[in-house]
Length: 223
Ligand SMILES: [Zn+2]
Image (cartoon, rainbow, N blue to C red; front, side, top):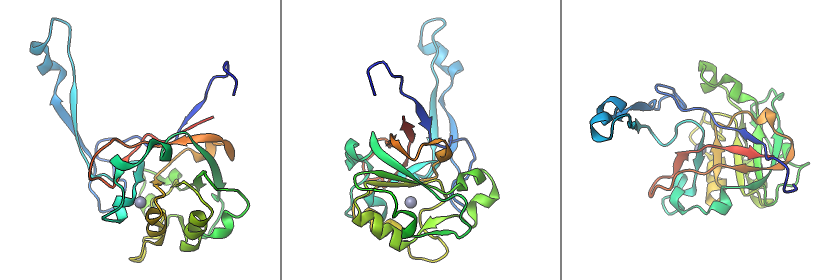
């Protein structure tokens, strides 16, 4: 990119709104005022007001990033991740939105070099966001796919689906494999259909909170 070229950003995040459900069985965020604009009037000069909001939510809300601590007690939490793991990552998109099988196996990844890359898996499942269908029958990666991505040196794996794992059983092999290797996971992405297959960077940075394994991100691509 030359100095005069304008960067283009593509937002890959869902908007967090009062009452929305990200994952069935988990509570929706509660938004309210800590300080209303009206109540702030007496604190400041005439015509100067502020709003201070308050949000109560579980960490797994909206589009979020999992750090190793989400799965492993001794793994790095979100405050310990390096920005080099989260920002301006060279990326590739793997497109499987037409596939009828729910499981995305390693063969979906074989054609594209993933070493040093953020790998974003476009399943198309984000089209169900906000509907009951989002919670049932999502696409996910197999353990073999996760082992392949780990062994081939992917640095982050994202998906536009409910869960990167099959949640019908009690095992979570993809979370286990990737997070054990220190590879962050981003789930509930959207707009992946707007991305080129490569030639862009991906950024998804959570706030810096100690002792949290997961947190919402503003995920975006820079082209
Ligand atoms: Zn997860």
